[in-house]
Image (cartoon, rainbow, N blue to C red; front, side, top):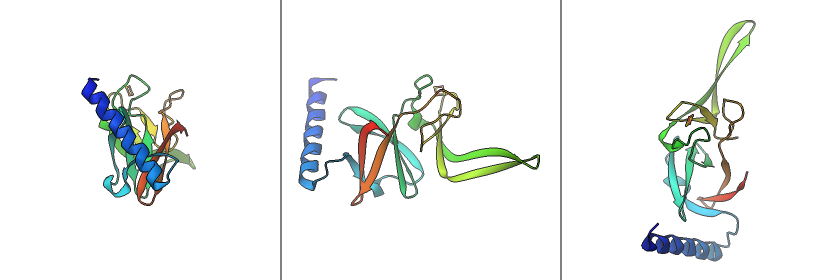
Length: 146
Ligand code: FES
């Protein structure tokens, strides 16, 4: 990071802190208006030099570390879809579509991660997720563990 970039990051952080003081919001980092996030799409957002992944799914918003825990692929370049799960009912395979369960598919090896929990379909791996809320139309992110 150059000195100019470092100064820009500090200024962004100072602006954010001032906005939090002025609005009285002490919980979370304001990453933008909810309406600015396209529905059923994900993108990365820079917050003071740290990149986070953001996905809007209907009325909900999900925030996560955008690096795959397997081998480091950029998850925001992956694919977003509804969770599909197959079960056997009376020995007949049944496919269930989870309308409220978005998953991201890693662009490199297609592992699936549940955006709600961060759990991978492959046991032992988990994507880092962060708490996000919407207050007065603004998306606020808390960086601690969910
Ligand atoms: S890098 Fe994501 S599944 Fe391999």
